[in-house]
Amino acid sequence: MKKHLQHPVFKTLSAIAGEKGLAVYAIGGFVRDILLDRPSKDIDIVVIGNGIDFAEAVAARLNVKLAVYKNFGTASLRYKDLEIEFVGARKESYRSNSRKPIVENGTLEDDQKRRDFTINALAISLYPDTYGDLIDPFDGVKDIKNKLIRTPLNPIETFSDDPLRMMRAIRFASQLNFEIDDLAIQAIKNNVDRISIVSQERITDELNKIILSKKPSIGFNYLFDTGLLHKIFPQMVALYGVDYVDGRGHKDNFYHTLQVLDNICETTDDLWLRWAAILHDIAKPATKRFEPGHGWTFHGHEDKGARMVPKIFAQLKLPLNEKMKQVQKLVLLHLRPIVLSQSIVTDSAVRRLLFEAGDDIEGLMLLCKADVTTKNEYKVKKYRNNFELVQQKLKDVEERDQIRNWQPPVTGNDIMELFGLKEGREVGIIKNKIREAILEGEIGNAREEAITFTIKVGEEIGLKVVANSNTN
Image 1 (cartoon, helix red, strand yellow):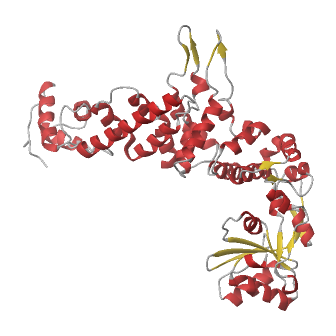
Image 2: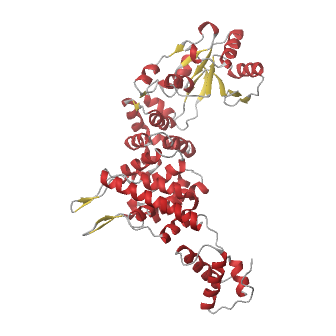
Image 3: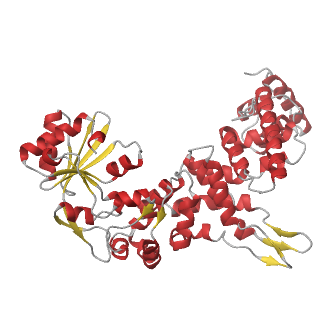
C-alpha cells in the first residue's frame, strides 16, 4: 500500500508517530477508495492514544490551523488539497433510545469493530516500522472484490445500535453498484422501525446521496424491498402496483418513476431535476380513475402533484425555497412538451410554454425526454424526433419573441398614467389582455405595439386616454 501514500503529509504523520511512539493508522473511506481506484481528499486518522494531542503536533509541524472538537474527541485540519480528521481509537456502546454512543478509549481492533461495514474497516499503518501495512480483520478487501456490503459484526446489532447505518448500507450499494449481504438485508427488515430515532435531516442527507448516485434505482429498490421506503417516504410507495378492471391494467408507476429517474441521471447531475423526476407522477394514486370504454386515467395528476410538492419537501426537511419552487414548476408542466410533441406545434403554444417555464425550460425538456419509458422502439424514435422539433421551435420563437422570463412592455403604472386610473379591476383586465395578445401572436413583444393595443382595449371598456401615449 506504500505506493498509495505518496502525498508528503503521510511522511509527516509517520515521522511524528515514530517520535511519539504511537501507533497511527489511516482508516475508513480513504483506504476503501484506494482499492476502488476512486479519488479521495478526506483522510481519517486513528491514533492509539490521544488523537487531539497528536493532531496538535501535526498542525504545528505543518504550520496550519487546527479545529478541535473536544466534545467529540476529534480534531481536523486542511493541508494543501486534503481534509484530515484525527481521533483516538475508541470502542462504543449504545442505548436503545439513541444512536449516540457511549464512547471509551480502545484498541485498533475496537475501532475497526465499531465501523459500519467491512469495506470501511480497512486500515493502513503509518508507524515507521510497519508503514504501509494493511490491516483487514473482516475481509474487507475480499468484499470489495466481490462487490458486497457486509457489517463487521452481527448486522442486527450494527443496525439496531445506529439505524442510520441501514440508509448508509443502501447508499453505498447505490453509489458503488454493490450488493448488500443477505444477512444484512434481513437485519434491515428486522430493524426498520428503529429508523424513527434518526433525525429527518440525517435520513434525507443519505436519501439525497442515493439520488445523486449514477443509478439511483439500485438504492430505491433496496429501500422498497426492505420496507425502509414505507417509513421514510410513503407517498412514493403508493405509486407501487397495478390495478385491473375488465382485464385492463395500467403501468406500475413506481417502477416507471425509477426508470425516469435513471434516465434523467444520464443527462444531468442536478439534484433538483432528479427530485422532479421522482415527484413528476406522485399524484397518480390520488387521481387514478377507471373510465368504462376508455381505461385508466390520471386526469390532473400534474396539478395535484405540484400542490403536493411543498408538503413533501417540508416532511423530508428539504429546502422550502426556490429549489422547491423549481421542482413544483417542473411537476406542474411535465406533460406540456409531451402534448406539444404529439400535435402540430403552434407558435402560441410554444410562447406559453416559454412564458411559464422561464429559465427551467431546458430542465423541463430533459425531464420530458426521460419520461419516455416505452419499450416500443418505433414510439421512442417518434417521440425523440418530435421532441427535437419542439426544441427547435422553442429556440426559434425565443430568439424572435424573447418570451422567456417575460416582462410586460406596458406596466400597470403605464396603464394607470395613460387612462388616469388608480389600481383596480380595469388595470388587471388590460394587463391580462396585453399578455394574451402577445402570447397568441396578435401583437409583437414590443412597447410601441403594446401601447397602441392598450389604447384600443381601454377604449373598448369605456376608458379615455388622458396622458401622452408615448409615455416612457
